[in-house]
Image (cartoon, rainbow, N blue to C red):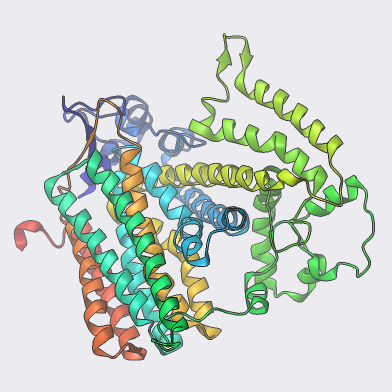
Length: 561
């Protein structure tokens, strides 16, 4: 099973070659076999083996664990990797929550999209950004593609069992019947399509586009169903009914969502506006701490905030945030002018791990220098032609700039996350699939878990339950479809799969079975979901996890079935 660390994914075209992607000959040893050698040979093995080379990321982690630290300090290296892994999850969560999602909301507001369209497009993208970017990054290398399938399917099983079951345990409720049936049917279709793709062992260009097309059809269905129901309500043909998830009031949303990244002390603003200097505006906007709020919070909140402050400070320096709910749209002239320089510079230095940013034009002038020069000129022009009190008419452009910059941060963190997980798989001789369905799936789902359970405790269980099934449809369709589509070139229009692992089939079967169970049991209970339903789902996940781990450690074998 540990051989799966080499990946069950390969990219091939009509000629069946690997193309430009890194590959390891079938006769060459795979990187996880380093532990079979003497500890004195680890460094040479990792440096000479092509399978140990990682694409992107800040550091070369296999070399760091084998060459930099002696073998007796391997437990220390593993501990540092685990801490860095946890911090990467914090980076992903902060970036998505405070910067990526607000800018997506601003973009949808500027485009005048309805709440339903925005919810299944921009909001779904914002909530699923860590999952989708992790999947796209994992699919970019055939050796780590098992992480993507493990994470997408593993997160699906986790959310539809543990999170959905937890909601039923916390707050028994009546499920929204029509949205539930619609989302479960679409999700079962997506899982069935993926199962067939794994069975035939390939994804063609048409099938990859079909994933994205199925999501577009899902969005169209959501909009159409909402329009029909509203029309029936206006004509008096349908009651208000409980099928639509109730929405919290604006005051409740404000209280539950916390402070915005662009303003950490809005509730303490003076009643009478006063003119502030540009320097004071800059220092206030760059402060990630609200000292009055700090004094009211418990010690564990403060401790977690200390870890988040460096991330928030760097993000505030490089990512603009547009807030349509504020009178000034969160316009901070000195900081936004600085963003004109820092955001494009961030994009070129993080894209392909800085390959494009360090490229020298005609071997003389680097790309990052040109971006700095152009950005500085535009920042000066913007600063001179605008005022501190009123945002310019083109302020909405900063929402697109913030969306791009935060997406680059998420992509960089996801790349580093995938490399860390692959390194841990090499050290512990674990397959990428089991790492994806456990660590990566849990890490990417922890935010949704807390937010959905909190929403249920506050009295909105139907909304939280709908989010369990609606959000993961985006993750599987866009994550797999876009991840495969980006690996195809003009000469290679087929992505070949090699799911020679029982664990992959167990994972796909477990997700399909959990959906069938909910699809049958929820209507059988007349959509009245209580603690018995929640306990069954959680027990199902524990049983699935035991079977997956027993399969990984070869207690359960294909020959024994």
